[in-house]
Length: 449
Image (cartoon, rainbow, N blue to C red; front, side, top):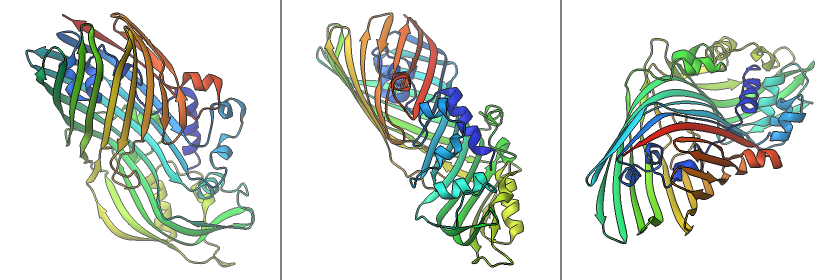
């Protein structure tokens, strides 16, 4: 387990990432396939008859403990992550858009898109427990530390591919108003999955001869793994090699859109959508998903409990599971070979308002409808963003500012030149303050009349 956290930190420092993918460009009035992923009803607002997505990439990460300046100035970031009493939350994920195509046909619009996802998350990790496992023999515990949590601590990794089939229809339009509705059916291709959940953890950590021992402990554990992540979850190559598996899942998006029109396009564009309704099933010969009861008795001189130093060389959840089983402290409650997981269902809403010709301001929010605590749930986070934008036909510049559930406030900058766009929703705050989030995205599209 000791190798896990440095990986998170390395990815954080190299990728400079956030959680609001394609912030700024996705609400552009030059509507394309990317806009339809926010709301499928936007397909009816295509700015050209045909739209082709060539390639898009967004790499994201955020946390609630380590700031940008900490990465630059600190030699021991692990200590900063586990400082204080607040549970540790960290999200690292990537979205990759492959070839896509959309077209308008009278009152109808149709689209097809390809995507791949990779996510690696820490959810509500107790800082004392995390530091003890990470340090092991470093005397991280002085005397005795009590841990009492009524939530589920999770370490989760997922990769999957997606083929989206979208349709939108213009329901009503006159010189002033326009109403659209749309839907997207997503065919899901699960790649790899891993999850470690420790629910309602109650325990005690003692320092015995400068080593951390866990005893007097009770918790409900879920240990699950599938595909390339069976042998390890800290190597990015394990995710990139398994972005697309076999078809084994369905999901759907539904949205509505309204425009208050003017002679140049619109004065106001607004939409509502519910996205990612559905899930997928991981099937693999090496699959395992097991629920356990962890019960470690009160430590004694002869048997002080579970030595957390034993986890120093653990490289996979399968290794951790074997270690815990060999300790005799686990009782199996339920085991299955198929792993069913839910996509992060969310509600999104936005308004794009023309202030003066060529200058717009967008407000966007996404709110998750399911809890990240469930072991079968892929995670997301709540976001509210504000983006002022100067927009011409072939050029755009914008600055996106957001309030994120995990990392707080971020501000960034981006631009579009013809079909190429590049941006970050946190580069401004990364350079001017100690932000706990950063991101970068880029892409290229073609608009064909």
